[in-house]
Length: 102
Image (cartoon, rainbow, N blue to C red; front, side, top):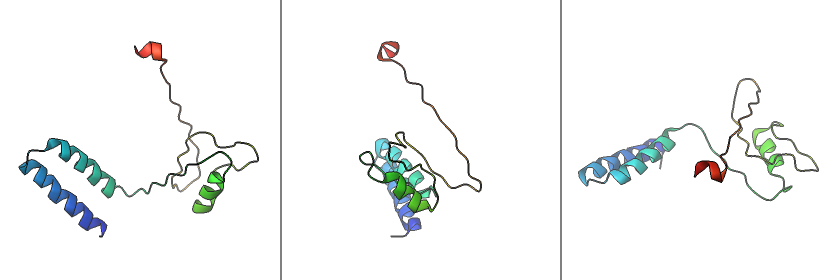
């Protein structure tokens, strides 16, 4: 099935959710439609430590974007995207302690 056919099928299903009064399904179908329309390709690489995940990613993009070392070199989630110029951006997440959120 080609992508336009899949989007058309989701659009048809969205019309049905209105006819059958299923807003719960409509929300899920809208999310599906957004994913189908997104030009970004997502590939998730997971596995045990030191099993070649960074080396695989480097081979997939044909560039040394993740460090490869004898020790653990990539121990955090890493997002790699296409850009005209190479760049790195560090994003930190502040987590609340369980006591602070109670």
